[in-house]
Image 1 (spheres, rainbow, N blue to C red):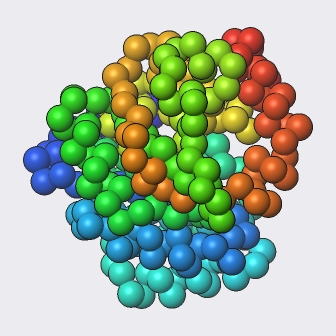
Image 2 (cartoon, rainbow, N blue to C red):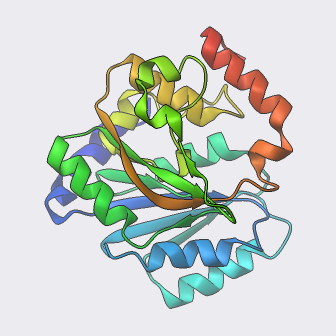
Amino acid sequence: MHNTSRNLKKSSLIMNNKYISVIMSTYNNEKSVGACIESITQQTFKNFEFLILDDGSTDNTYEIIQKKKLADDRIKIFRNDTNLGLTKSLNILINKTNAPLIARQDADDISTPQRFEQQIASIEKYDLDFCTTRAKIMKSNKVIPNLSFYLPKKIIINFKNPFVHGTLLIKKQSIYEIGLYDEDFYFSQDYKLFNDLLLNNYKFKILNLPLYELNTFDNISSKYSVQQKYYADCVRKGITP
């Protein structure tokens, strides 16, 4: 279905070098994408490819990405002719990755410098399928997940998503096994993915450290809260939208 055997075989050859693929889809993020990219290129862990897909932006996002690429050849740029949405864009990027580990990043958020180093170490130490971290809300001292961090995730996920999507680091093999992001879910695709991973008993850990700065102002969740709730309800009910 996804022609995975060749990609996974190639990925296994790179594993010993601790090489990862970072994927980011962006749409009209000209105000934030520059700082976001810099937070990745300035990571203490250096051995990665950074795949950025411009999802049909109508502002200066694409031009900003192009300038960043001139300064860092780890950046690879792709572009959708029309806006396809986050779910399809992420699947496009996953199918272009070359590393055995895939990291997510959202275009209006910031990763702290040691994020990848800490997450890779945890995946190796505990033999995890995926790893996320806590995050600090921008312009506040609030850290999420908050109280739910200390509760069983298989219980919490029946009510809400206990993971911060932008902090995901996952084995490529695991995300292919689960079927990538479910393209029936235009919104809440992360909730659906994490729910599938937990239902299938994939091994994970959420790092207690807030290694990510999360924007909650004028983002997808705030702009499309009604749609997000509908798709999230579909996850909870186990039905297709």
